[in-house]
Length: 264
Image (cartoon, rainbow, N blue to C red; front, side, top):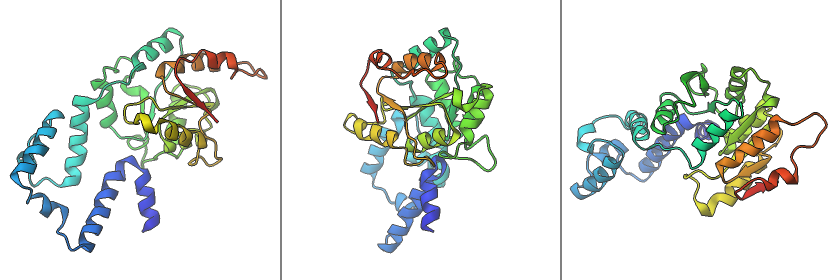
């Protein structure tokens, strides 16, 4: 059971189910009622606070969804909230424009499922850069799903660009993602810690985790971790222009990066 739970915790689709299961077990051990039963007994004041925050995400009052199974509610409302709140990280739009100008192709290789990812793309005004055929999902495009750190979604993304994985760059913000890119044999793995979900005080420790590559079969982590998304452009240009037998990851290249970065 513990091995199964550990596996589920690694999978974005199943993380909430795992959390719910563990919570129910702990509540039962403490002689507390099930979550669904407890939810019906929330006080008016608490409900008002919850409803106020739900409205920020475009979600209806709790009374309107009473009786809906929590797992179903979580999946549906996650998509609804993302449709209202998802925004591109700073520098992403400008970076994609620069990559287009340089003639460098790209796509999305994610473990998350559809429609969650397309909804985020639309909400963040990134659809011109990522039409449907450029979005590859480990959960939705495979049967059974193939979640990171398995390499499948990166192999699929590389094949869609008609490139060998060794001639591709992966940009990742998670340990499982770095493991997936490494296991797929991606030519360069760039970690990114500039996203808003990583608190400033955790950026350095998160960067070190990405560099370590604990979830890669060969222990390979990111070669570099950047804090400014736009720094991907000089890295991508240098990678694309590299020549066999010539060292390209140079001090001159690193000097072009505008934000702090981390190396092994």
